Amino acid sequence: METRIIQGMEVQVIARGEWDIVTQEQREMNKRKHNRATHGINPCHLCEQTISDKSLPTAWYVHMNTDAELLPIGVSITEGSQGYFPIGASCAKRIPKSHKTKLEGMF
Image (tube, rainbow, N blue to C red; front, side, top):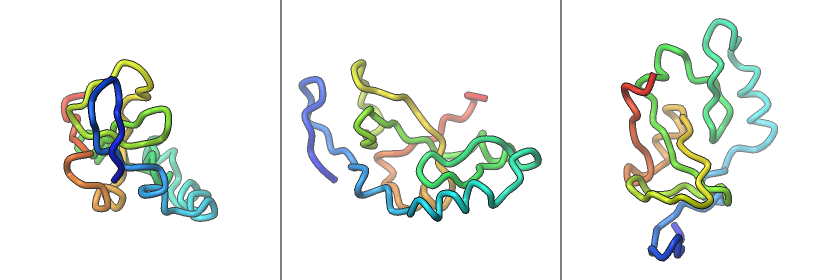
């Protein structure tokens, strides 16, 4: 993790180089792994593997900024935020709890 100053706050972020460990070839394979017409259309934002419609309501989410850094939960920024994105179960295992959240009730 890296420390950044974001809107005057010192924040521990997970840089793209730390979370982006899936090759482009693997991403392409993940996209084709499941038929999105039957399993769901929402991909994991980190590895592109399909998140099933059944598990999406209980999926983990990460908050990402425009530099593709994962922000800790509870850090509210107005400039540079891309919002919250769903991640799959295997990617969620690699992300510390401080940087992921459940957004139950959103769907």
